[in-house]
Structures are given as C-alpha cells and as structure tokens.
Length: 182
Image (cartoon, rainbow, N blue to C red; front, side):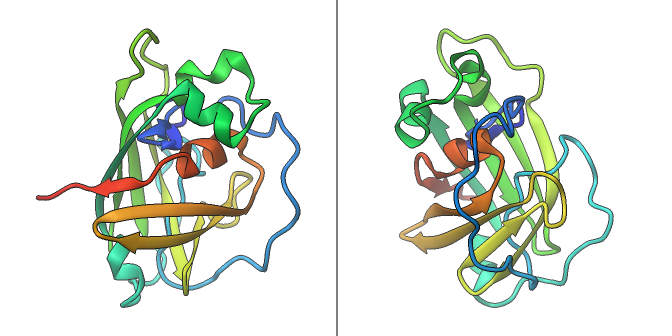
C-alpha cells in the first residue's frame, strides 16, 4: 500500500503515499490531541514508533482492532478532485488497519485495485492517540494527521481535520472502515 491506502486506501488508502505534500493543505484545525491512542497512518513506512503513547481511553478502546476498506480511483478523486493521476493506483485498493491498545498501529495493503500493479510500499507502522473523538496519527511527524472519528455498527468513519498528507486524507476518509471479526 504505497503508504497504504494512505489510510483508507489505507485499506486502499492503505497504500502508497508517495504523493504526500503535493497539494496545499486545508486550513489549520484545532490543536492536535495529546492523549490516548488514535490512528496515525501518517508515519514513515515500516518505522517503529519511538515511544508508545499511553494506553487507550475507554472511548478510544472502540478503535482497537482490525478494520478494512477498499478505495477506488474514483473514491480518491471524489475526496481530492485534483489528486495526481500518477499516484491513483498506488493509493487505491483494499487495506487492513490494525489499531493496538498500546497506541501503535499497522496498515497493510492486502490487495491492489484491479488493473493496478502492486505498489512498492504496502506496509506502514506508526502511533495513534485520541482526545475525545479526535485521533492523531504520527503525532509530531511531518505526516501528522488529525481526524474526527466515529464508530457505529462496526463501521469506522474518519473526517479530515488537519494534516498535509493529501493521499492520507483521500484514502483514510473516502469510505468507512469495517471492523474485522476475530
């Protein structure tokens, strides 16, 4: 998942984020959260976190587990109409996002989009933390992302709040993530 669906492509988002920073970011959101785990699909691929965040709060516990989604090129363009065409395949497909109670996550592209080659980057690791219904991924990194999140009926939805990773924003928010049962 070339920077994995960049979260949503992370499960299609989950994919290549080689295009990060190629589009102007949206207006600055509220101050980033600083508490328990939140998704952070915006860390350096395969980079282990330097320090584990505090254990998940009761509210954040709803995020813990595995989630999957599939993102198409059309989904990416719906979220970011000027998404660079050369990065569509690398950021589309099916992915799985695993949020751990210790504030770490892993994002893997499990299948490229039909008609697209397998991206070079299909695995990302990082940290997440939450403050209320805000999640911060990759806190303090150049790819830090902040989303509002909700879980309803085993579906996880992210709404962009801040961050400069355009592929992350497109992939992570394009479609809901479905909880995988153990």
